[in-house]
Length: 268
Image 1 (cartoon, rainbow, N blue to C red):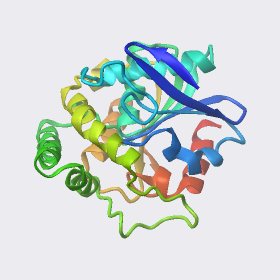
Image 2: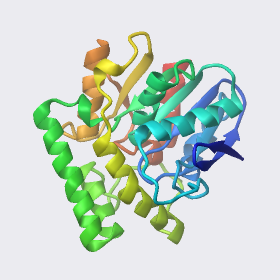
Image 3: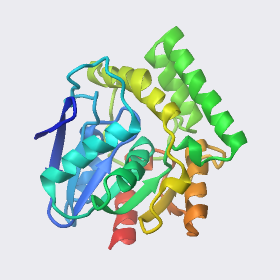
Image 4: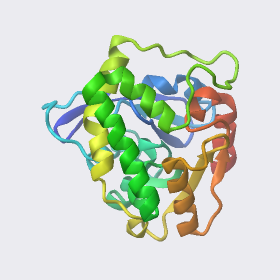
């Protein structure tokens, strides 16, 4: 299915029955990257997944037009308007979590509960940690410019504490090889979304005081990772504990069954 957004057509999928749960993916992940997780949530939720603007089937009218996290939130709000007229549950993953936080600010009433798993929100960090994060992301962009998306993808994994060749995983998970389509998504993410992350100005003080946010971290994520630290800062601001989820930064892909159980526990 598709919906019209400002300057783009956004592709989305709907699976299952029950309360609406929007999943917003991280990095270059499109709607299909959540297939294992969706299969374990669709018995309890109407699960909505989508291709973020610029990825796979969600093509902007002008591919050279700049993007922002706020624009991505506008797209997510357009998808939600197609599937529900009430507040939805949302699982936001890294960049998807930042999008969810913007939804709470700019589209009040669209999201009732947000699980914010390791949001890539640099302004949440203490000054020294923010500088370190910006330096790391700048090095990823430089690797992309000099050596292409493969070198940058490897650096992204290293920054997030992910070793794609040696990960603890549940059995039978879906593999996602680097096809031409996935390579194109990585190119867009590196060329556009990283800049949007670096330019984003959302702060902890901007978040509505009454918003229901569940900060979350991966159990095996590096504790000095900037997404992990942003989740802890969010939890501290809300005066709650950060909820632990199975796996690391990409636990939704490596441990979909246990990850789905944790979602059930938190929003049941």
